Length: 172
Image 1 (cartoon, rainbow, N blue to C red):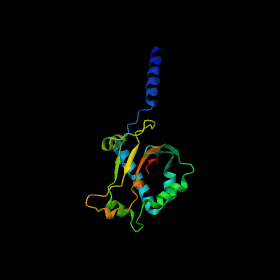
Image 2: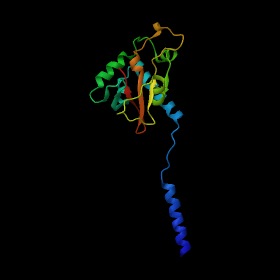
Image 3: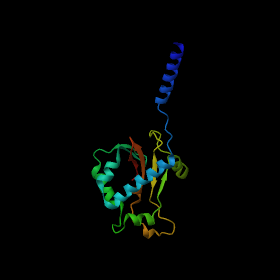
Image 4: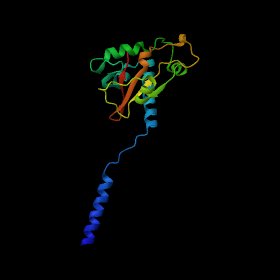
């Protein structure tokens, strides 16, 4: 009887331990790559003037990266669509042209701080899936005359929310 009880307790403890969720280690390189892919899909939407895609990709609350706080997305569809239509100044240029002419970077909040010596506002709570898309700088050897974008639209923050990538912060 004691052996059965001991065996049952051991089995329950073992099964219980197996059912405890293990902390999933997030591979930051994979997250960064996913953030970059998502961000480039947003940029491609600028060239296609796909307002629906961009608007539905914006989080319900948006951090204004210029330090003006957090605003609700609700009621901002027209403004977002108007900005999207101004993102690419030269309508003859394509997404492929963009990739040829501009640097594309994805940075963590810490990398942003190191590069620009500018932290995010204290009221904003960061997550491990917050990344910053910087895609406004011309590549080395490209001339200012090659600049065909509205640079504010090519700086934004993305975050994975409930398993879906969203635009979480914007400038301009």
